[in-house]
Length: 80
Image 1 (cartoon, helix red, strand yellow):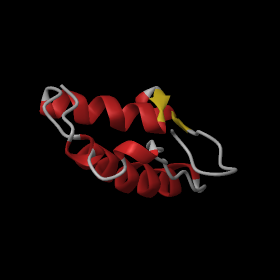
Image 2 (cartoon, rainbow, N blue to C red):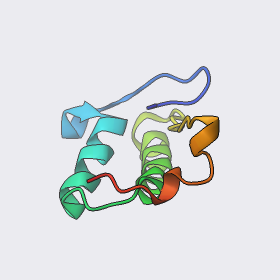
Image 3 (cartoon, rainbow, N blue to C red):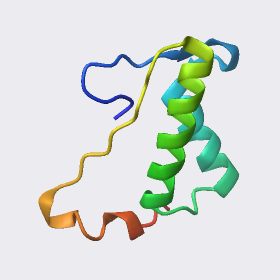
Image 4 (tube, rainbow, N blue to C red):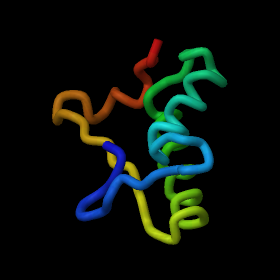
């Protein structure tokens, strides 16, 4: 999800997207969708968190929820 706990999903007005959506689409375009979920999760966690503080002066920390059965394997799954 775009945020953790009681945070709000914030805009990236300069890019005309939400902060999470902008970085999600950017990474999918850069990799042409050839990325595993673990790498995508790490990228989003880093860039959304840093840029949200820089641009909006508020925290926005994406959160990944995974089923109990997939907890040990999901990071290796490919997006494409």
